Length: 280
Image 1: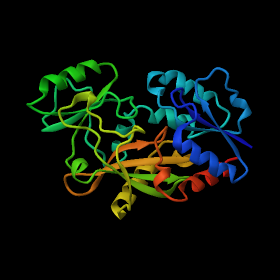
Image 2: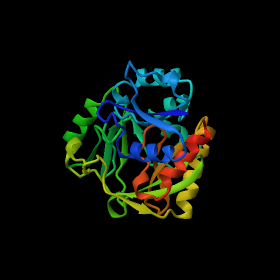
Image 3: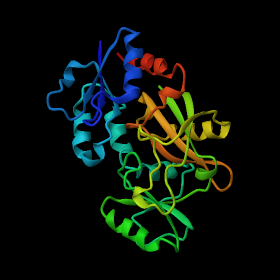
Image 4: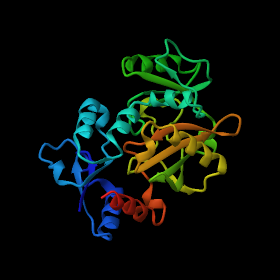
């Protein structure tokens, strides 16, 4: 049996997580190959399953990316989920379903009243074109940022202080079951604009293992249960932060190409490999 691990042209080998998955799948007798998703020479019908992983340039080719996913005979996560999840306006659906989420303004005409806020495009990966601004101090820069994103569409959220004090928590799921959690250090510097990302050599901020609380697990379950067609998810990453009232709120629900932090959780690569093999 043969599996394609979909990636993009800047990391044709799929990166470190793909290497971990390939080794774990080899232990199960499954051949896995990294393949650039928009490579015209790729023979997708020859693969028993395509697993979407580091396809991080899709934001510049979203329509093409979704048409490609639709054309695949067997893909995880499902193409319908990718279509829904690659536009962050899915957060409106989750909020409407009663999932506690970070308050979000969509294409606002002017700046919000929040003391500090984050501006980003609704179609984005790796915090691209995302910046943190201070009301009254950086209004001119923030308005210019919003204007540059017109038609993207743009989204504006309050910057929650817990991001700086305790970081974000990411809960990773495999086949609908909780696998492991990670703590993500803040990556947006105040006042630094879209150049203010603090990341390491692998493009991530500082990542450490975490133990989720019952409240965080409950929030993740609520979010995943509200995903249209979410019963067939191979993987999911639920990013959250503590809100002003001390309870967790959803920041993002990553179902397309998230880092799964397999390097910080023993046996997690083997767990995902078994889930992939079961789908064959």
